[in-house]
Length: 357
Image (tube, rainbow, N blue to C red; front, top):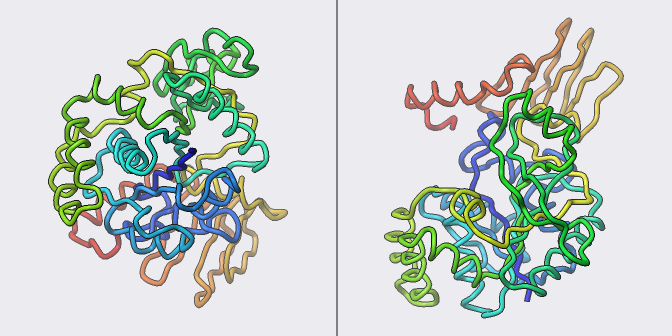
């Protein structure tokens, strides 16, 4: 059976002040009338039943996540007691899926991406599952054909085309986030993809690889697995999970293992990494502005303005800004400084102003 896993433990700091520790970007409506995590579940359609849908998030977000996904059984929203990157997250979902289904195939997605059209996404998901069903040793990830020389994404170099599988390749190598000149070479070469962090594999297979490459974490996962469904589960999880190695599934397994496969994604993809993604998703007016809320703009160009319903924002004679109002904090920044928003959070943390984080 297919089990869908949504990784939803991120904090979305680059979307401050709307995104906070208790209400991160995946729980916000940034592209449409549904939140990002709701859209992630929606796009799976009938691929997976609600009883086989899992969400992995952190303790402060569990309640809001369950509120936004009332279709899911409460126990299918799994809690990470500490942030330990994606390898422990994947391992936690795998032991829970296996507890219910020894033949579980995991289809794993981040909670904060925008993908269209849905039909193409579902078709690609089914194809990935078919690859895994045909060969249980396969670890399938999705590659996005790069549309520009991005320096903020990891790249996948494709190798041999799999027999009888159009658009499915062995992975030749992984490349870290490159400098611009190297990214341009990757795009020109035509055999590199962006790594979008969507995966498909058998739960038992990924655990076997974790046993091989991350033995301590694997052993802790076995201890947690033994406690599933018992009164001791929460205590065991709280003790074992924070002691796992904090490492991505890419570093822990994919860059080491055999049988790693890349499927060329046929859909449009956006990782919604910062406020600059919002104009791409929501569109702009004739002056290049992206507006959400009660806003008046005069002689304003290429500016993103978002505000709550009870607060008017008016702009006059400004260009290239990001203005985000919330009830307790307001951001005003130049668009080209969007990646520096983390500096504000660091300053707030230094001041002990945790109520704004």
